[in-house]
Length: 240
Image (cartoon, rainbow, N blue to C red; front, side, top):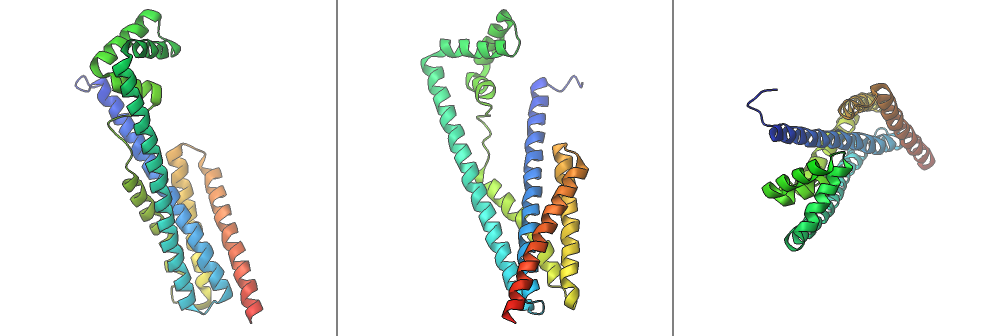
């Protein structure tokens, strides 16, 4: 280890890296949702009206916009709720530290004892950590929260919006290519490739087996396209 690098800097770097990986994984999953949901819509409409490009484009754009805003809104509400909860817990912890510091010191020492430290060392660690930053010490081990770094709901919403849109553009662009009756097959092939990549990336980031993740991702997306195509075909035949 580099002697110029302090242990807490290593820990902060590891935390930041973990957060970045989580954001990246969420972005990949958002793109995956965009691919599957938009592909289902445009291929279903194409099954019903294969030569009506205007109808396919309208449905695809509507699916993209509605899906992107829905993803962004859901992420904003979810992260905002989490952020409010974390702030409430931190406020409670501040009150306890101000009004019952001895009890909080003993609680912190007990938490370290539960993690395997001896009685003497647990009290020593608790004393030193509380002398430096009592709130941070308690928030980290007791709540698992960094009081100086809350997740931004706006950043989460923007990330979801962008990732969903990028994924949704794959089937939308491919289905609108001027290739006549082959548009459905070309779009489906592009979707399968997109699902292969998102499955590969998400498995790699999560440390999961890649083969199973890819197969699962491709099969579910393909099943969605087949189902919506058959529904569109049935409706199109019924109208004719």
